[in-house]
Length: 80
Length: 249
Ligand SMILES: Nc1nc2c(ncn2[C@@H]2O[C@H](COP(=O)(O)OP(=O)(O)OP(=O)(O)O)[C@@H](O)[C@H]2O)c(=O)[nH]1
Ligand SMILES: [Mg+2]
Image 1: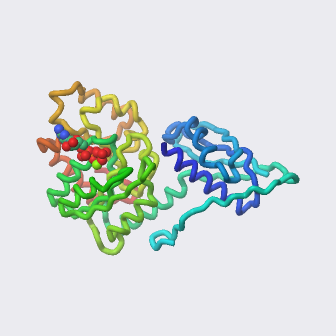
Image 2: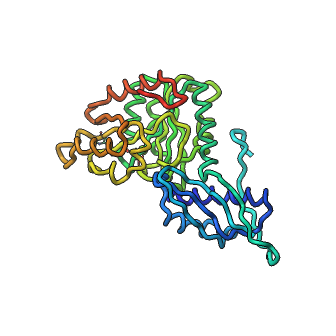
Image 3: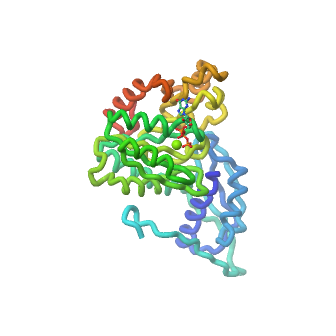
């Protein structure tokens, strides 16, 4: 269940970015996810909306690019 | 605000403005999701290196024998040692280890399934690390019993050590590959129980090497004492290795 703390980390990155770039809502979060990151796409997708409730990312969809390394990164966001 | 890292209780800003006129656009982020943890881990690692402390992150499923092996290791008094104990609740394990005379700090993770580098930084400071305590010694970090989640979190340790007891079955390296890939050393524990269980040692080592060709291993029993000398010698060697880029024991 460490996906909970990963989602909390994602939200902190997103909120920090929002302060910098002054956006108010996040529509899409694109994530690079490595085969060896030790994280499953399913559980991130399950946890993210729960953790994001009440934040600017509460309606955001997650989109994944899969790689063969240990990557676990937010690439970019669609925002308004 | 705390003195160790300047953290404050965090709050998520709540923005619920309506944004009818806003245009959808793309914002580049390019940030590692674990970057926060990794920054704390690097800070821990720097401090440990400055004070010539060997830090080992002990991971296993619940009940594999981490605390028992640590109690035996600490009781030998061969090294100046301290322990950071991680469990979801209770300070039973820290109490058990304090009985050996070594300082032990308990972290309770509550619902959390792993230790993170931020918690460990605070526990290090509680142990007086950085202020002279434990210089040149060994810091054992016993992680929450869990073969999955702790694999992803760097705490600033020199190496992860994975324990696997013979009662768990030899297939665990294949079933939980992330952890065995992350570990430098595998300790197969409770070898005194081998006569009572079906556990194919060669197969276990084969699986572990398949996942991680560089993994080292010992077979130990905290009941009979088998393998404990090899473990202590390994610790002695590891203590003397330069640790900036991991170490080759
Ligand atoms: N027979 C035998 N039993 C052992 C050995 N080492 C530990 N045990 C027993 O295994 C049980 C669990 O041991 P612990 O040392 O508490 O295991 P742990 O990994 O610290 O457990 P958690 O912290 O709860 O994850 C205890 O009942 C120990 O007495 C061993 O070498 N042989
Ligand atoms: Mg324990």
